[in-house]
Image (cartoon, rainbow, N blue to C red; front, top):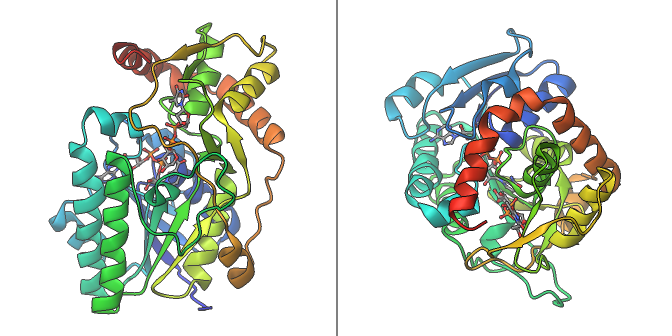
Length: 338
Ligand code: NAD
Ligand code: TDX
């Protein structure tokens, strides 16, 4: 276990879903830490996600992690980089993998080079999808020893970025850690993703859309538990190590959808089956024993129904946040038969 106390951190992708939740988490829980958010404000980034946070605690810099000249201006002086910047949506990667190669692979490479130049601690945010998928009846879960086996354009770029991070530690001695987390839910998630898409569909009077039979399993974790895990790994994690983050939240999609419908006062069967995702991963499941036993992290949002209820409330109360992009997202899905 290390004992690292960063005072000035650079959070890339801090205007996206999970990155902005991490920024809120640090502001609320670590009053002596200053955060610089570097974000390219792609379709997925929204300045509103960090609006209202104290200006003396959070500075925003607009820019791309592939921009070497900008990195040279922004990075020096920070104790750590936490890299959330990524293209993150599987369906988009299937339609056009190009930005995923650019941001996820080249962007991570550029950040690693900059971190190396200034000897800056580097934490990389990754995903359970790098391990591929599990059969529905497989008794095993993913662990840090599971071989990489990504199956989609998105997850293969995340796997590539993880490999770069590992190599920069081994070859150059960069102080790195990687976390691979399962599916997050909570506030500020883009309406292209499963849970917010269905909640906002119901609020708009559109029938929810389930891919295929809905038997694919995801391992849900509240994004605040993810943030606390990342902080734990950043400050206590051993350099060169990977930590899996998950909260034993396995559920299949049809169960989650029926729960959302029920909580929103609808008939649990009032949804449509739509075209399945090509190459659709069947099941993800995380064994987070290493993080729990070595670093002492525990999730606190263990009641999924309660977390879902709060998430539904958030989308109900923040219609001005998602309405401007909702139609375009649904139109795009409709063109894909989804
Ligand atoms: P998101 O798509 O909501 O946010 C990504 C953010 O990165 C946006 O603010 C976007 O503007 C920014 N960005 C994109 N390209 C950039 C670039 N080239 N330069 C600078 N900024 C750029 O994504 P998310 O769901 O918050 O995911 C964040 C990270 O967590 C990703 O690395 C993703 O792979 C990982 N992850 C996500 C989940 C999940 O359930 N959403 C689960 C595990 C891991
Ligand atoms: O409308 C939908 N209907 C549906 O049935 C959508 C958008 C999705 N789905 C299914 C596909 C998946 O089985 O729901 C499940 C979850 O889908 P997404 O929200 O797109 O997430 P997923 O593909 O599992 O990936 C997420 O978790 C891992 C994040 O988007 C990734 O960034 C993260 O790495």
